[in-house]
Amino acid sequence: MATHWTLGCDAVDPWRLAAFWALALGYVDEPGYDFPEGASIIDPDGRGPAIGFLLVPEPKTAKNRMHVDIRVAGEPPWDAAERERLIRAKVIELVAAGATAVREDSDDGVLDHVVMHDPEGNEFCVA
Image (cartoon, rainbow, N blue to C red; front, side, top):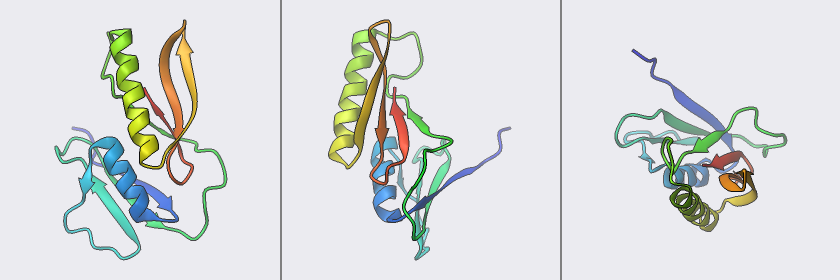
């Protein structure tokens, strides 16, 4: 059996970041979480880890050593055109929610993933 775990994140505005990542991942606010210096979101289906966002005074200053890959296209094998459509649709949704698209990476001319920054500059990919 796998160990249950939570991803902890520092944030200047934990409530904004929690709302962004809830939208990005299809998560919801953690019921009963009432900590005045942070926010927490959970997978409503109970499969993924909880993600906590704790208030810190300083903004992000360096590149992440770990990052999230949002896999909107599921697992291979993929239909390349449908995968690209799903990736681009998610990127548009996340840009509207405050993310920034940084670059697109392709493999043999086929879109593989888009590198993005969340509203506080944390790197992640949409694949």
